Image (cartoon, rainbow over all chains, first blue to last red; front, top):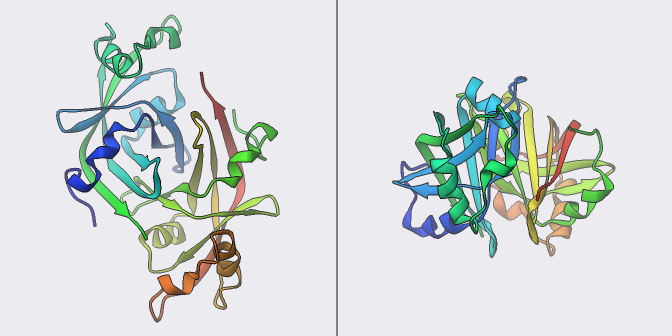
Length: 133
Length: 133
């Protein structure tokens, strides 16, 4: 039912602009929000500030899922389930790679003084690739 | 940051065809999949068979979230976080209401002999309504 890599039938979805990241809140329940992402080196990466609730969640409870839907066919989607590995990105090196994907957006403009920019990688994923109907 | 009801700015999203339902797996991690849904009486309802993993998950761990995105604007979305309340739907009364929303689909055709059809309601929700950018 799940695979370790993204099957050829669904790799095109990695071109999607946004994906739904789910983290686990302090009450143990899921919380989803839309995020930008970058697929590189066989893994999904996300740039987050440590000021966001989703970041606090995954620092406490690293289990996450990233759902990417097909905008043309709502019955086809990917859910990438794994563990969030967090690395500091103090010089916005990774954030700028993400920004380049999104028309040169500058992620510094989203941060307040004192916020830390982080690179989040979904490691050791189980990939759930679906096409219904 | 969250409200108890869906704000007027986001009620149009309830017309979306699909939503991403996240349940908590046996490992405590999130699992997301796309589902049909019906909004009625101020609550979101989903028709599920008990044969599905997501159903087994929410019967064990009722915390769920339902994310509904704006197909026209990926920066606008709703995340409805709450507890799944499950009722049997042996005569497909609710399943047929869902089918009627989706062009007269017959949800019986998705079930195997012995499967139980259930009506799932997200109760006591916290609604997270976002418009970014």
